Length: 96
Image (cartoon, rainbow, N blue to C red; front, side, top):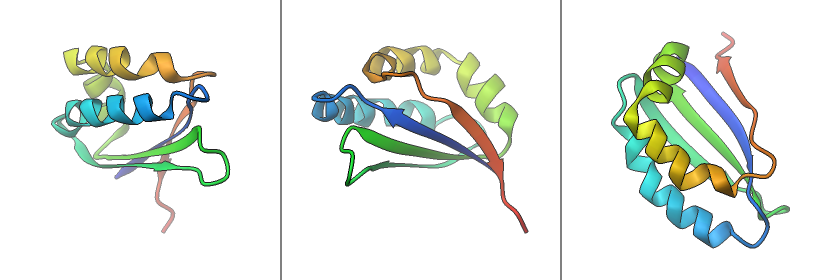
């Protein structure tokens, strides 16, 4: 299992619109092969910051699967214009 992690810095004042767009975008990722789960959390101290955590079966399910899919193009159209700066995405493996 791989954990995708991204801190999403949303333009201040557009949080409500971002959350509505994310609600539309969520099913686009949820049906992808290798997808396991997703959580989006909002910072209490900095309300325009969110943490996105996505569990995948493999890095390739995310990078070569979802990112190469037509659904990703829709995802980008719904969400990417909210970010400033654009988020850095990291992949993590569980330490046993």
